[in-house]
Amino acid sequence: APELPSSYLQATGSASLVLRICVDERGAVKNTRVISASLGAAIDRMVQDAVGTWEYRPTTIAGRPVPFCTNVRLLFRP
Image (cartoon, rainbow, N blue to C red; front, side, top):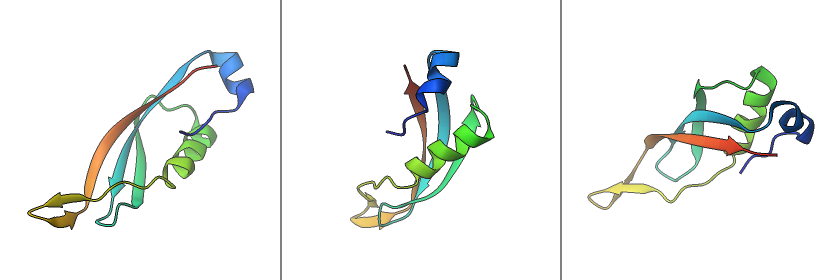
């Protein structure tokens, strides 16, 4: 999971961010978008960059891999 700077968490306590993550048919993250609870542009971008490295097991329909999108809530604590 992405990590926030300790100075940010010390100042804010816990924080959460909800991302819309779109994944291609191979399981690679192709797009992320903040859909609620923005933590500020720089922090949002840092989290999105980290999530962009995630890999998923491809979703299949009738045995064929297909792209998909999902919402993910990330909770950060000090």
